[in-house]
Length: 80
Length: 226
Image (tube, rainbow over all chains, first blue to last red; front, top):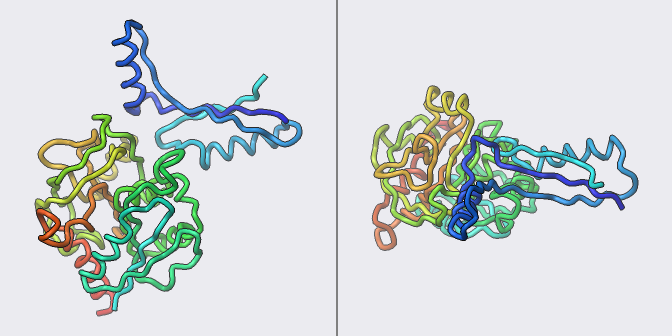
């Protein structure tokens, strides 16, 4: 079994209320100077070998479902 | 009699209120199941409020790929009237029938209130019974109602008269340009965060401004036949 990671993040220009809330909580806890943006991580288990076709398939899945590219960016990588 | 389909997804909440509103407006509500690939010959479709598929992944993201949505997308592109209310608006954006997206309210809380709105255009299937610049009150209740889109899209929506409703008396959720609802370029698909189906009767609402959404549809469909 091989694993591919898809990271999804809100675009920089899109407001991230969750990240803002976490940033505020960290500050209240004394963790100064930390700004957080919150995204999502998908761990995709793949049957068989990771090939270029498989990676292209995961990218297509990310584009179609895992991310909304109107407001989010995504990154696909093989877990080492 | 006009037949209006109301889609029920797993997690829809306001499908029955939407059906009731259709009935109060003198049309026949037709329940449509998300897993069906038939629209049962309806004249129009309403995507109701709620939390389809538990709002998993993103609001509306999974509902958008349900079998019935394939039919709704084809019908909408062919001109059928479609109204998306709250979660239905989110589904329409995920389905790219409307541009942009809805994100979590900037205030980070669920907002529930009687919301003042201005009708910005009567040039849609669902607002032709209003007058432009009418001020109305409709229930607003959501956690993810912040409308966003890239600057070019906003410019196009504003320039092409596709902003249908705007929030008055304060922006409840951080929506760009106080946008509460928009339409596509043909004016047959409308999405908004407030819930007109809850503003049908004096007993349960401070206004009955929701009625005109449904009378607008009737008026449009009568004009088609006539």
